[in-house]
Length: 92
Image 1 (cartoon, rainbow, N blue to C red):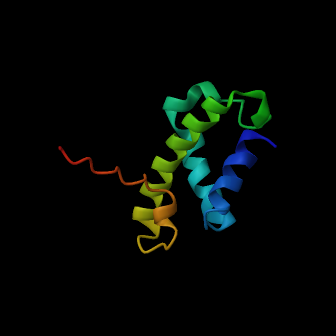
Image 2 (tube, helix red, strand yellow):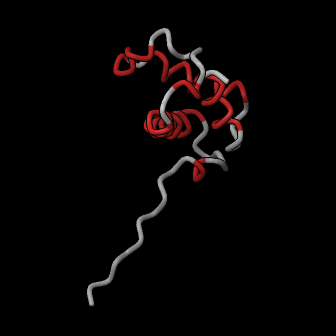
């Protein structure tokens, strides 16, 4: 599975339509901050360390949240891309 396919699958399994997932990933692929990825989107996802995929996924989630806020602010799946709330630690 290519990196692009892997990310599209991650997006669609969290409730996005394929066309919406493609729109988000297109934005990600155009980001100049990810120019190191140019020519690598079709590489096998398993050819890279899991940590790289985790960092890339965190980056994609930021784009997803921005896209949802702009295009579908009432999307039911928004919480699936939001960060987990941090546990509150009480001083003892």
